[in-house]
Amino acid sequence: MFQCSESVTNSIKNRELRNTLMVELQHKVSNLFADVGDVERQTARATGDIPSFLSALENRIASFVKVNRHLTGDVDESEPIQSILDH
Image (cartoon, rainbow, N blue to C red; front, side, top):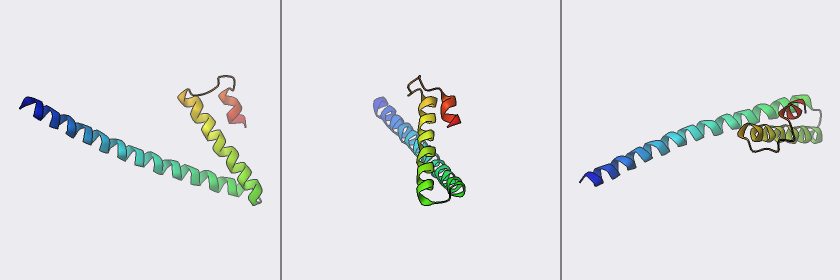
């Protein structure tokens, strides 16, 4: 009997944890999309034509990726983070 109740308790805890993580993931993804929209609008205001817009947007998104890699430790240490910020 004890094993069964422990298994159910673990199952409930795991389900609650999964639900909490899903809510957090949804929140993070919503924030990410809002950030991308903000970057897109700022880039559109700063550029005069579609080719310039696309090039600038690609560069900004690439910079986000590089900064994220620096923050998570997944980076070639030869490129200092300041060089990304200056770009």
